[in-house]
Length: 227
Ligand code: ADE
Image (cartoon, rainbow, N blue to C red; front, side, top):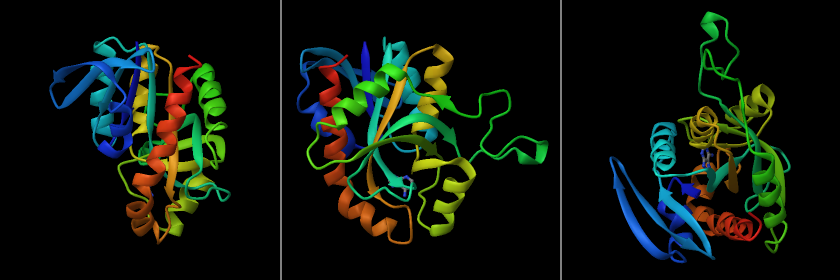
């Protein structure tokens, strides 16, 4: 079954409104909704903020029968071309806050794990095609950098851009990617840019997050017809 997850209510509530034949599955720390969205059986949930919540929720989704996972939400733009309202479809994901460099590992590398988790080509193609149909929205493919940090400085942006080649910064995607990869379950992350992760990020985020969350939702609905 296809699973769709976001971190916050704003990121999934517009999809939840469209969910038919809805059942609720209570799990420790998270509520999963099972139902039918635009004719497609789905699991839908708000997992909470940060990598730990994301990993926990992804694990519950897999136990509940998820065979493909789409993460939808907002992000801070890092790629210099990105503007508020644009969409990033993940090529791969890194955990920018992992630091085991003292033991000789590259920044972002969890010992024993891949340095970056690749998103599924078929889900990426469907997301990109669906994003192309959302009016007034530009989409690009790129690396998503996740960490338990809200990035709000030019130095932070530079670190992610030059150090990781990241297109955007958020707080969950790579944790979902790691869990899905271990289970062999395809995944993709779709992020609308709510801010450009710089000194104005806190204000922009509050202003634009509810608006741009709609874009990601439109992309997910467009994907349903293509999967
Ligand atoms: N989500 C939205 N904007 C973000 C930012 N600037 N940093 C981390 N996560 C975000």
